[in-house]
Image (cartoon, one colour):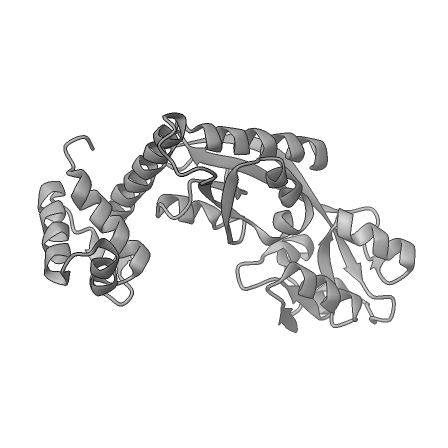
Length: 280
């Protein structure tokens, strides 16, 4: 990686972030031709095709490696500038993190609130797919259900998020496999795993708040995080359909192997809150 010209690496990152060569040229104050030449030179240097020239552009697997390096380089540069006092007074460090919606809606926000001086760019993605954002270099850390580390990343367990099978008291339930079900999106397999194949009558609600509201309103049954379910049990607006069962989803923290004070502080806060909140 030390043989890769920094200007070419940064140009690739600009193209990916902007989506097109023209937009990247405007951001870099270069001509589109100059941007194209830098990308071609970088591809010749690596001997790999790094970009698919679509709109927006798409990275190849080799391109993902270079972009991940580019973002790590940019973060190290920002950290060095901060330590040397070369940043504008009050300018925050930015961290991009992928996190699943239910973590975001339950325990994750209190963790990042405890990290001062950092601006967070959170990417919401299913816990089984957040590692893809790490591979693509779009984020520097992720809450994931995958224990196997992405190349160049470290991994540590956070604990398990517990779900209960819930429904409104007014919903007629004879068999979970035959009762209308609420799923978060088409990546959501929790309900199918819980019953070994849920009903084909499915509603998709890609928001934790909307998901809970749909279950409470009687549209179908669903798996609800314990912290969201218990107040509704007490209020009588939800019932536990399987009191002797639950679904635990193990979560892990994956992050770049990068000596970044801001990333280390965020990781420490997130692991601490997860340890205190999740099932250990």
